Image 1 (cartoon, rainbow over the protein chains, first blue to last red):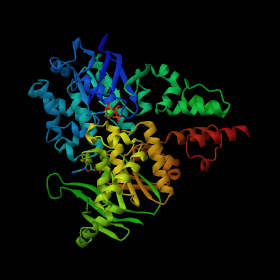
Image 2 (cartoon, chains in turn purple, green; image 1 turned 180 degrees about the vertical axis):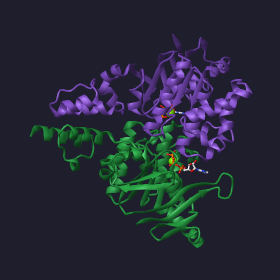
Image 3 (cartoon, chains in turn yellow, orange; image 1 turned 45 degrees about the vertical axis):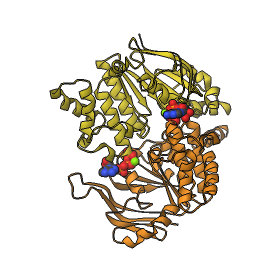
Length: 271
Length: 284
Ligand SMILES: Nc1ncnc2c1ncn2[C@@H]1O[C@H](COP(=O)(O)OP(=O)(O)OP(=O)(O)O)[C@@H](O)[C@H]1O
Ligand SMILES: Nc1ncnc2c1ncn2[C@@H]1O[C@H](COP(=O)(O)OP(=O)(O)OP(=O)(O)O)[C@@H](O)[C@H]1O
Ligand SMILES: [Mg+2]
Ligand SMILES: [Mg+2]
């Protein structure tokens, strides 16, 4: 089932330059999608269009059967949670607890249920001890954790992460992805759209959309996207470590395949 | 210009219910011209520590010495020389894009140099040059910094600090939000500055950057410095106890060793030299 259908979408901030140019893609329910692309390629603009913070100039977005426009904004946002690129743009409450509570109030969560949900999600991101702190007085990574907790607590059907974990270490990132996997048991339709510059992270998703100068260059499963190595390099993106290792070794005369695990690859190198 | 932390403690909101001791007994020295990475778990005190380097934070007790500037609670007279310190030590904040404020990118980058007495026209030239260093072309000069993408904003903010040509460059997670090409170029530029004698202090969660670029690593945990070592010393032990990952290159090197392929670890600095070393040892 397609939760979101983006068709021939274009957008311009200044009425002159199209920062998105004829973009089309679909998002299936329950999938983990990555959007990758150079700085300024249009990723955050897509995220803002998907959450009705901007309106399409031409083309269309249909989300949850509704056309994305001002009239449907409220309904679409009730299904969608976005964690912004900069957590300082996210916070509303004066304490971490209030901040998470604010989102829950918006979703009409019953008052007696709130504290339990707040505790649950603060603990999922390892921030239980910080509920009474002010969001602006947290460290960079702590801010990102709180911003994520606030969105996940609302249990949206679609979660959009706009570089939401950029200040976390790999372990912290994994924990967040594990949390989402866990939440998917309760809601199999839970869909994650993750905008990221971390190629290791992107290549762990179900489907990758590659943007270049406002256009979709190509998209597909990680395996399919890897068929476009040259283009990836040309547009200034990178490959996961294992891919780079194997291709450099093969240039030196090895014949290795990156389909195998790192252990097996090293095993073959050492034979 | 050497940098020294002597028994530095820092407490946020002292004597309130929010009191939080973020730095505890920090002692270390950084040599002029070195490249130091500062690492550690979320909230361990990295950003707090580096804000002592240009006097934004004053130790609750102890002192931070940068050249002839002594940042300490006792010596308030020193604060008159704060300007000199700020000129010497350039600090790129963690979310540095939040600091942009001028109407155009050009004015924003030119602000710092002008503030330190550079004439407006010269400051504009500096802005143009510096913008190139962060991979943005001249068309950005007249744009509003608020109408940029996240990564573009970050680049402008970095340029604003580079424009001051500081002797000590402190960068807090500068590569978060940059695309892979931008990351590579930024690191190459920082390495260049380091080769020309500048002292670099870089905070990062990317352990692969630490492996490739650092002369020294300072590991923090819960407000304390728990380890100071070279990357090869640090990663030769199990770094999980510091909640760090082992860099990918080190992992492969370790796996090769375990399988009997004896690589010369001193020859391995990055992926290319790892592959060269594997090829060399295998062809013997
Ligand atoms: N508010 C705005 N007004 C005018 N132009 C804008 C605005 N926001 C972004 N742009 C421009 O639109 C283009 C796309 O920006 P967008 O923020 O979508 O990029 P992005 O892919 O998210 O980049 P990054 O990786 O740097 O976050 C960029 O060229 C940017 O300069
Ligand atoms: N302005 C502030 N007021 C009060 N407490 C603060 C403030 N800034 C940070 N803290 C607290 O001090 C501790 C250290 O924070 P700091 O920002 O130095 O961590 P960090 O190592 O930079 O973390 P990260 O990797 O997440 O950026 C944290 O527990 C944080 O919550
Ligand atoms: Mg963006
Ligand atoms: Mg920090």
